[in-house]
Image (tube, rainbow, N blue to C red):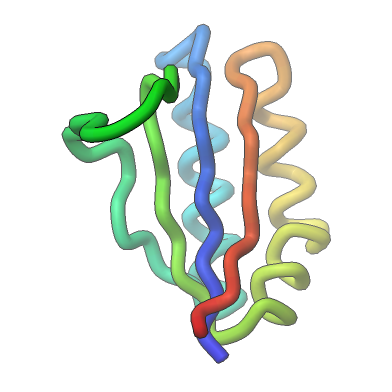
Length: 95
């Protein structure tokens, strides 16, 4: 069953994020994922939510999404973003 990874991003060093973006893209591809949105325009239509940027990923399954997140490939990407951004990631299974 399809699963989505929703990432709230708080970037403090946009230039420093280039290596992370390259490494993360490769890891997403390796585990069958794809980017549905990478920081597109947002409009909050109800409630309070102070998130400056969202990324939405799609994976073939929750298991593949977890494999991606725990992989050495994505671990290297997370290391590359240290001190440059803070992420809040949520895994959501489709119903």
